[in-house]
Image 1 (spheres, rainbow, N blue to C red):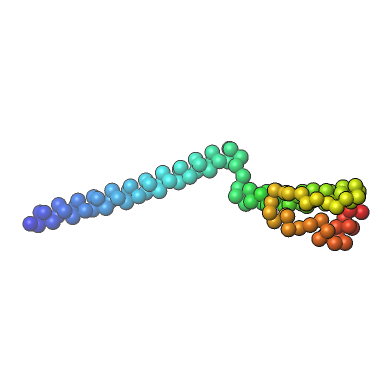
Image 2 (cartoon, rainbow, N blue to C red; image 1 turned 90 degrees about the horizontal axis):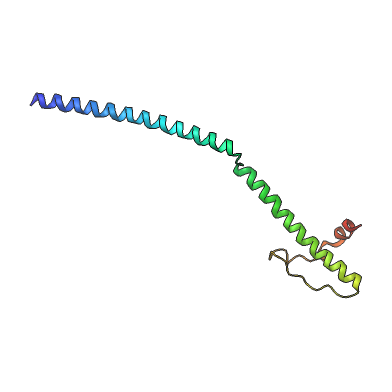
Amino acid sequence: MQVDNRLLDDLARLAGGAAGALSGVRGEVEARLKEQFERILAEMDVVSREEFEAVKAIAAKARTEQERLERRVAALEAALAGRPAAPKSTRSRSSKAKSPESGGSAARKSAD
């Protein structure tokens, strides 16, 4: 019986050592793969998430401003023609709620 216990102990130590070695190899492989992916992405000149979100916000603001100016130009053209401005449909629903007249004196000042 004692021989069996010694054999089982040796097998358990061997399995434990193999598991530890495999864990070390796994960590090394993961580190190498991460380095390779980072190198490939750096070569591809990929933008970061923060840069993408910043440009996306700038584009959304520019679109909103463009739609506001389109409505204002339509209102001014209608005023020059001596007729009331017809509401012009735009791409976003939130911009429909704003009217060229809601700008008040600030809108008039920016036109000067």
